[in-house]
Length: 286
Image (cartoon, rainbow, N blue to C red; front, side, top):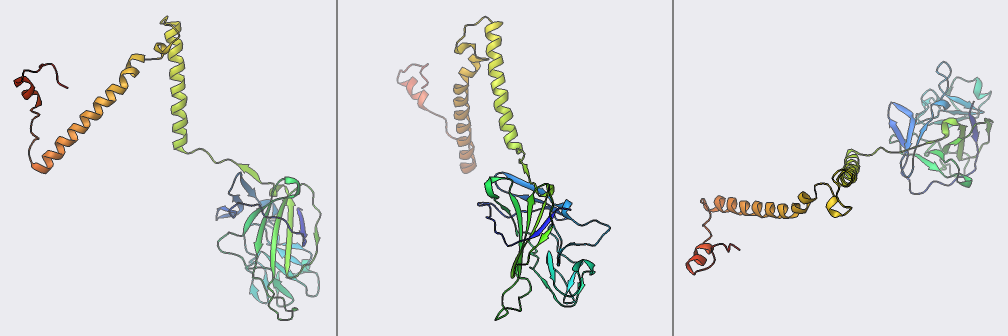
């Protein structure tokens, strides 16, 4: 049995982190907490046995772990939409069947958007805890104006030992579970296809250069110099080829645009004819 403790001790929320959320709505026990690093929790070990009651009893508290409302328990003849219900009526809560007509209260409303779980920093910088908070529970009628609303934080702490205990704290409650299921696993997001292609390209380029240099020096008997690079003459000509290709593309685009606008081919360049007529060098085509 994991540790289940109701206490009023506070814990600091881990900063700069978005709320945790279930990875799959069909499995609310598997949560992921985004940030750096990313933590994943599998809280299924805290759930009650399948062949038993659909809740966990802690003294006079009915609790359901994971991101699930406690629908098997009714309070004031209404189905609970909270993760925890408090009962203070006659008899032991453990002997009841989860249906109360009075002397009970919901400790918080269950949020429909699964945004109420966050990571908690632990003293000493150890394994972070998981806190799921529920607010807007039943009002506390013992107050002067009766307006104080119950709330509850369900804390999941990483640990190996179990020591059930319960302490009342009105109107805010904290219920803690301790066990291996609360030891979040650091999950590394896999690389995207784009990053895989970029890394593969640079690795292949490095292998190409190194293997080509070794081959040219060892087999081709070339000196250790720039000329030993693989296909050095081709790569030396590449900038000029790229320049010629760009010029050709630009000229072709201008001709196509002229033909589209004027409906005919552009006029011929008469500069060579003029130079020949003026006695210029026929080979000078610049």
